[in-house]
Length: 458
Image 1: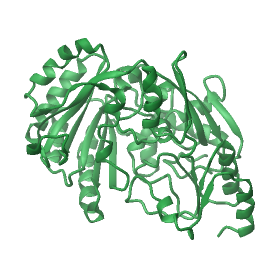
Image 2: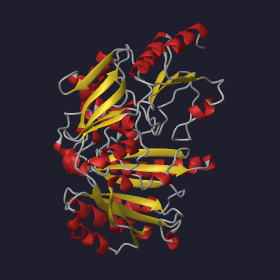
Image 3: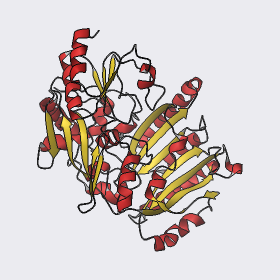
Image 4: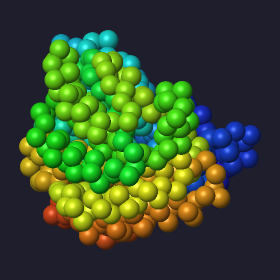
């Protein structure tokens, strides 16, 4: 219970808005992307600026309140919220300044990637991010960040130049390769363990029109298609990216009616090379099978980034599991084919994202992200609007993950984890874990920031 006089003192300094359990908009305010999460915070503080972030951190610490940080709110296990504590909402810190001469963008931590695409595209530039434009910038970045541009330009953290951070003691610091270098190292993959990032400085790249889209084959061809994809993509140029998927085709006008609700496998492509050479690049792709459906062509990069947003709006029930893989042996491919045929609900899916080439050029100990030798980042997601299907889709995701885990590197992408325990977190950071603990000891020795994939101080 928060003392009323303490709350009033906080209100007198706070410029944003505060939502309490008795307020009419409380239930709306505590919603996040994953509707499976049902947490009831004591208050939600919508910060209007960095000063509000500082006031919020100090208020939570002084009143011994559990604190969570909410940016885009896409986090699977719902770590943007906390029961009985303070939700520090930074979604209003959403300014962006693009510097086209230096090819950089200063991005407020409350932005989603669609905001960044909107701001950078008129300059013919793009940031290396994910595949859904409604994903929050902060969460994706702090976990590592991989997507369409990773193969050519590296992870999101490989393109992070600096960050502004509010620490657990309420102080404000800058982190870069020249200031607070150890904190900067930890922020690149270590999640929200070390402070509240209020803005990021990203390196941008010359990406405007890309050539891409999906190619689908019948689900019965999953093993054959995955074997072909594995061989083809490993010999393709850095300009060509494609993630493999198993899915059920949505009943949507963007797909032919005869494919609606059919289970299929496929690849979603993104080619960033010269457009006049795209047809040559895609000739073998169109010949394999051939695809039962393909929708390939030139498009603005933001159009590809947002192409699947409408199928995964906020408010769905979600459960996901992830792992990294160096190889896809035939035995693993057969397991994929087995579980692909059992997709439990129309929106449930499995994706294998490429994380090779530019990602692998960074040393394992150069950032907190430790799996620089992995080739794929796998996510298995059970999704449905109806909570009554949760057990069925969660069981499928867990069983699928368990069947493939023996072929994995042992750890997975921190952004694709539910709350899976300390052992799983250690496996994710490998030899970098002990250094992360040292940074945690220095910047958050009391573990104030613990509503996350937590790295505990000594």
